[in-house]
Figure 1 (cartoon, helix red, strand yellow):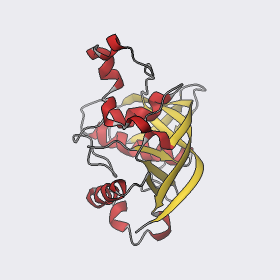
Figure 2: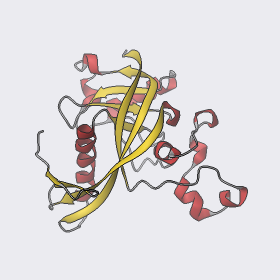
Figure 3: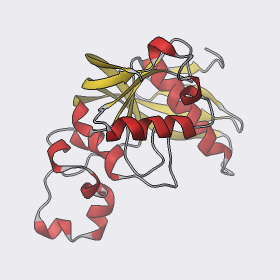
Length: 221
């Protein structure tokens, strides 16, 4: 079993078109289908683990918009997970990988297809650490098959774990955490806006929307 780890880290999350929503809903708002679609299913989050205040939507969205049609490494789609990278570069490669998978299923022409936002936040949680023994958890770090990772996460979640620290599968040397509850993170601050360029096969360019600087994505970095 992975060891338990408690630590404070500053991580980065790149969220696709993240849109803040009203943190406190009035009774009329709760009956408004349009507003509730934006907020998601708040009942999926235990009341004691919900967060509010400025920027709370960045932390809550991963837990109120879940579906078996959108599984991830540590969730089969029945529970939310907030994925955070320790560094900006790791966040880029993680999100680029998943954006490429999405774009490959479309008929979109080459171009600047999507804008993402950098969210800088603080993580404070009891995490199970897979980084020290990657051989033992190799199946959980498979690049494409998430079955073992989802089973491990389900076991840890049921035992009271707050999440998992693990080596990035998309950038060598990178580190990530998968948080099982929104209150495991705090103080989200919006950073850069980033445009991703799809060349028909992969994301080859990233543009800082603020400065206009364009960076080439080197595969295998």
